[in-house]
Image (tube, protein in one colour):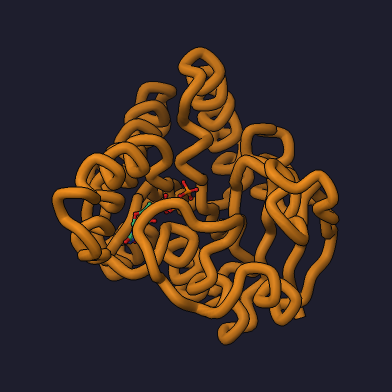
Length: 234
Ligand code: UTP
């Protein structure tokens, strides 16, 4: 049984509501098509705007307690996971009613369900690392990181017009870009969580980074076909 695992960045659900509704509808169509091919899915949803808002609101009250801010971020990932889960259910897809809160719970649901939707687990990393952990445990061929940039770049393309984009990278090259595996603050990490990148490197797990706003790119990658984005392997 083939299983594919994707981290869906929380930015994919916000902020333009009508676009996001269309995105959720096309995600449901993609899931139906993929399941009909006998492929199972684990979708790990990020916190996006509610995580950022919650963390910013609480930061002056909490100070530097990163774990406390992480817990707020995790709550936002679970809110977004619930939105995705209910949208899939509304499209007639059977999704476990429970949003699993640990890797163990998610693995046991993945053993018997065609689709599992979850958010974060514990403080200290982001949902990229949750998806990578699931992909390793399920022996998936790679982990998909669906975000809101087209490729991994040498610098943030939104602020640096000279940023170079990469189709292929090794894990060592990715580490040069994202930095060492440290979780220094809650919310707002780079294109790939450095802790997740390090985990994938140690496990020898390939990563596919793509712009998930374009459902055709995400769908192609979930189907195991060639896709527009960055492949990290080796
Ligand atoms: P995200 O996974 O959304 O991370 O979790 P992100 O990189 O900040 O945002 P995206 O991917 O661009 O949307 C939001 C925050 O929640 C906490 C972290 O503080 C993270 O930055 N979190 C999330 C955890 O502590 N553990 C988890 O398992 C997931």
